[in-house]
Length: 296
Image (cartoon, rainbow, N blue to C red):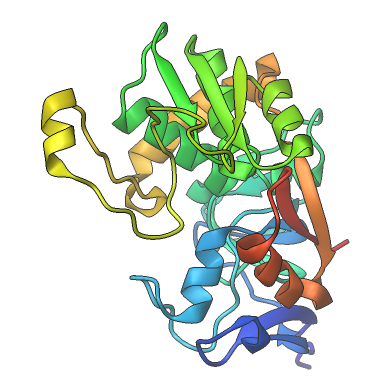
């Protein structure tokens, strides 16, 4: 006698477009883990700007339609496939990627993209680690090769990646300058590693900045770069190799153990309000912590 397929709620995208293409369905089949895969019962999932670019169809990587967005989930291992030895049912975990999509009650992930979540961090904080902290570490330490004693200015430091960058930079001995557009955001930046904070909506708030992330085009005069002998580095989370992920994870795991890695949670949305979340992460008045979806 065949067992009926278990169903779950999940967000599905059938066409690229605005936030309205995010459709909540209640009859999505719960995936079954294969070799080297785990199934996670999702408690929270991080919302990242890149997911809005992918959804709109303007990003360089386009998933096959239909798909479920989301990569940064935190939850409990529900089942493991063959050849998985690092995890067992009931383990608290977070991910840096999923196979089936994170905006769902259950998510499938390759075991090498899954990490143990320390008890001192809750599931919302676990969902805020993936893209923000791994991107910040890759940009600041791996690519920019930042060293203790140097100065870094983090533009838009009150959001997920910004807070992660401030915490990492402070832990590694840099002088940290941050910017935020609201009073609440500026307070969060100072509480999470910045020595000084500036309002980036004020004219001439700082003469020279080093920026993590991008929201659009800017004009650059190459002559200015020549005179200052500065470098411009493009960094993307998705180009990290499996070995680099392991390296970043080891450093960040140490940060969790010591206590300097502590995600700050901002706006929280239920799954049925994901379109509102996508609208606000791009057009909101100013970030104040990491945006997450709550599944349980």
